[in-house]
Length: 173
Image (spheres, rainbow, N blue to C red):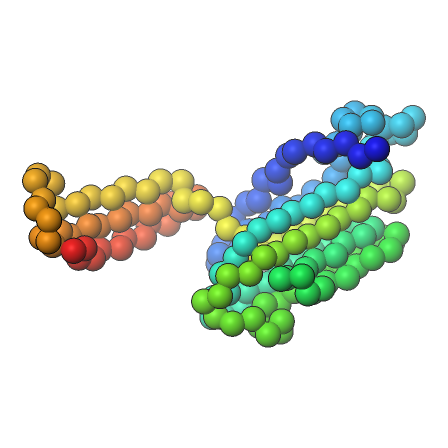
């Protein structure tokens, strides 16, 4: 029987819109689930990552490097296959090579199986997975009574996890 453990990978912004999770000693499930089963680490586990992303113009890529099995699918199409027990290997899914259309939203699914019994490594670098902003401020002027049909100006300030500030002014009717 399988045992599901919900967790997350702490991606770090590394610049240029790229996020990375890098763990060359990837044993986050030690002593969880069925335990280590008499070994120094819990080697027998799988992981799934699911995400929706909107194809943007330019170079959107999901890159993976690690040992054992990895499969990535974009809208049910196999985009990366690193199946097999092996040392660390790498692969990538460049969105421009998958026939995706700018502005369309797609499902991304990653499946990972750790079966190696001497090491566990993982590095994911991507710009299709992003994090929500750290702060969102919206200011509407005038800030008193607004009658139906009147126009107002709204300014949104978004502060990213890297401290970058984006401002979006505009008129709303």
